[in-house]
Amino acid sequence: MKAIVVTDRAAGTAGMRLVERPDPDTARLASLEGANYGDVVVEVHASGFTGDELDWPSTWVDRLGRDRTPTIPGHEVAGVVTALSYGAAGLSVGQRVFGLTDWTRDGTLAEYTVVEARNLAPLPGDVDFTVGAGVAMTGLTAWQGLFEHGHLLAGQSVLVHGAAGGVGSMAAQLAREAGAYVIGTGRAAHRQTALDFGVQEFVDLGNDTLEDIGGVDLVFDVFGGDIGRRSAGLVRAGGKLVSVAGPPEAQPKGGLALDFVVVSDRAQLGEIAQRVRHGQLRTHIGQVASLNDAVAALNPAEPISGKTVIRVRP
Image (cartoon, rainbow, N blue to C red; front, side, top):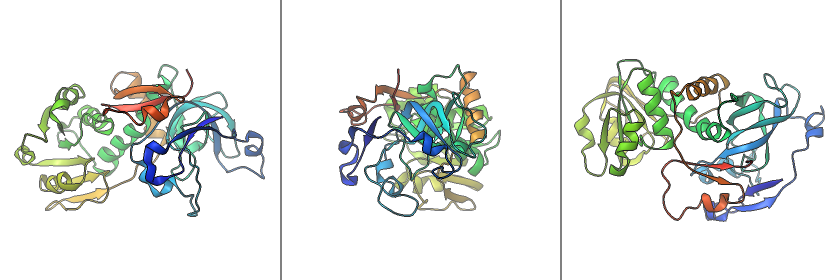
């Protein structure tokens, strides 16, 4: 099969190469001797890639800390199940699925990938594979940040940093649907995009003063650093700052700051898919490229607004 691999952590995305790799051994997968309990083989139709995943230690080692290069990156997938191992519950061969792969295993920038069945959910037939791959990571991250960790409720206010980005645009839409008042941040050029995704008030981080917004019940932080530190001071007593940019560097007075790593969840993926089907949730896809063109697409000459999705099959 064709696959994108990386071997040099220092080279980043510029070190990606398109190569031939062996297909997953489906006969061995189906045997008691070779099975990883609960695995499925997915014929990849579309794959997503997170810009900083080549900096993650899990990209380069397995669960026991052993080097596993050359590594196939990409952890967002939409495709069709082609084989099941023992314990692969809730899915069937030929089923359309989407979700996330394990961080410490080869990923989805390939024609096939092996995934734990529990990390996948059915993808409705009227949701395109490109959309499925584009919403898996971003949608789950936004959902878990707002509701599992932020406990956002109707009537509360939420500050969403990077509201025009992949995760931020998902958070803005979900928060607005939940009945929250949504304030978004970003660069001036992203104002209209953020408003289109449901933000009711926009802060231009290059020209406006962040502190002028007053207090909020929840901060969803994708930036960290100085923005994260300043945002802690905006959280009302009893509120939260939830970060996906690493451990927060400041704690809100009378509130709580925490960070988290997204995990795949079949039920949550199902909720996201239904919202996509009914037009309640839109993906922010900036470009779509083939697997043959993936290396160039993931090393753009100019910044791309929105997520890049690799369409592995037409």
